[in-house]
Image (cartoon, rainbow, N blue to C red; front, top):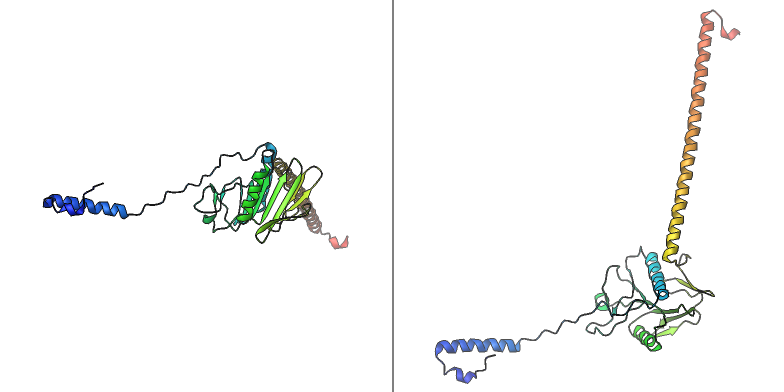
Length: 279
C-alpha cells in the first residue's frame, strides 16, 4: 500500500506526480470499499450416528416410512429422518436432528438439511425421538427446550426398552405433557398410539397398523398371490363361459341340421305325391 502524504506529491515531476495520485486514489477506494461477510456453511451432518442400535434404527424407519406411505399422495407434507434442522439464519451451531420430523405445508423433495428460512419459515410441527441407552437426560432436556422454543406442535418420545411413550403438545409457548398416551390420537397427523404389554402399535387414520418393511413385503406378496388367484378364477370362469357358449352354438347348429333334414323329408314326400298334412 502506497504511503505518500498528499502534501508531498506536489514536489514530484508531473508524470511521476500523476502516477502517485492515481495510486493514492485507488488506495482510497480500496479502503472505503466494505468487506463482504464470510459465507456461513450449514453442514448436512453433525457427525453423529443415525441410531445407536438396531432397535432404535428399526423404530425410526417404521415411523418415517409409514408416514411417507400414508402421506404419499399429499404433495405438501415433507417427512425426514435424522435431518439437521437449522431454525435461525446466520447461526450454524443452533440445530437439532430429530429422529423423525414432519413439516406440514412444505413440498416433498431432496434436502441436505432443513433451513427454516428457506422453507417459508415453517418449522416442523411434529417430531419423534426414539430413546437408546446412549441418550442422556441432559441431552433430551436440551432437545425439549429447542423444540419448545422453535415451534414444534407435537413431540413424541418412545423408549422401546421400557415400552414407554411420552407425548407433549403445544399450549401457548409451552409443550405440555399428554396425561394418557394409550389410545391417544395425534391432532395433526390423526395417527393413533396403542400400548400393549410388549410393544407400541401405531395405527393410520384408516385403522391399518404401521408395518415393518418385512411385514409390508409379506403383505405385498399376499396381495400378489390373491390377485393371481383372482386372475386364475377369472380365467376359469371365462373358459367355462366359452365352453357354455360353444355348447349353445353346437346345439343350435344341430337343431338347424334337424330342421334341414325335416324339410328335405317333406320335399321328398311331396315329390312322391304325398301330402305331409295328410299323414
